[in-house]
Length: 371
Image (tube, rainbow, N blue to C red):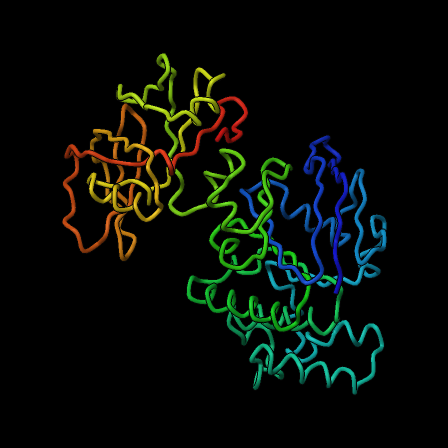
């Protein structure tokens, strides 16, 4: 296995569109890194440059301390698992798995040894003589992973491998991929638009938007300490709430007219801003002052509470809890509500409470976090 370094990577397409903008990233040997972002963010393009399927316009790609920037895909010693599996329909499972080994003219003994290894690893017993059309989606994906494993690459690349599977299969194959990466102790780069996949699987997550890296870090770091408003809104389900704030003397005015009293530290951090955006996660909003205080006590927090009067507009059933939508001066404000508690009525007025300790403040022009 090997480490990967991306230095000042830029990618322009023929129409002049810049898909990647000054990408700098170091991936450690044996690390599981996931690229995540919305459609068009550049995550698949970045993966394809690692594979050699796309040539970079400028910059350097280093794999295992070797410059592979201009190397062909076959010379990079990488294996890629595609979204659509890319299996040969006329070949059996066994022949699909060993196809590359046959092309490289590896011995039959080596092919059989590789088959034996991946069959038990990926639970493919009894499937070797079947054709791809006789397999379920999850089985096809495991065959594609087996084909990648027998190549014994320095780097595994996976391009949205679970997007064609139903919810149950996604969970099963997700666990298989995590176990596989752990068992092989391999360097793996994985692309997805699903931030839940990214948060549950990765050692580190790379958040991309419009061809630029927004933030890189462990899942918990991205969740609790987002560098900017984009990361804060993209990471977390349900998404973070955002409210515009307007300076009013030494305070900030919330939508609806309430004032937000700042402590000394926040006053310094926001001193040069007339407008900011407040970010607040739904799980940090409470319907009673006592619940908010109990949560503050768990965090040993002494910052003051803030309360708002809102109107309930919608209720979403999420299983063990509801997501309650409220309206605050034309702004949507969501909070979590346990399923075993009495549900409020739509259009009912309700008071909500939160602590300054759980608030994020963002620059309204740049989106950068200020506190």
